[in-house]
Length: 124
Image (cartoon, rainbow, N blue to C red; front, side, top):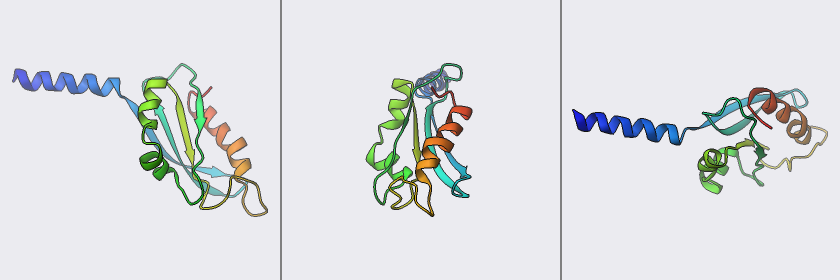
C-alpha cells in the first residue's frame, strides 16, 4: 500500500514538472476559405504570463506532425524548459508560404494565424 502511494505521488509530481501540451487545431483561413491544420505546443501550467512564440514552418513536402515527431522532437521538452509557445502550421505540400492567385499562405501566417494565436494563447 505504501509503495503504491509513493509511486502515485512520484507520478503526480513528474506530471506537473513536465506538463506541456500539444493542441491539434483546424484554423479557418478566410483568405483561402479553408481550414489549415496547425499544431500548437505550449506549457499548460502558464496561463497569465505572456510567452514568446516561435512559428516553425516545415520544408517542402513536410507536415507539422512529422516536424514535431521526426525533425525536431525536442520542441515538446523545450516548450516547458524555455516557457515558449511553438506553432506549426501546415503549409501544404509545396506552397512555399507565399501568396499566389489560388493560395494565400503568407496572409494566413502573417495575419490570420498570428491573430488567432495571440487571441487564444498567452502569446507575446
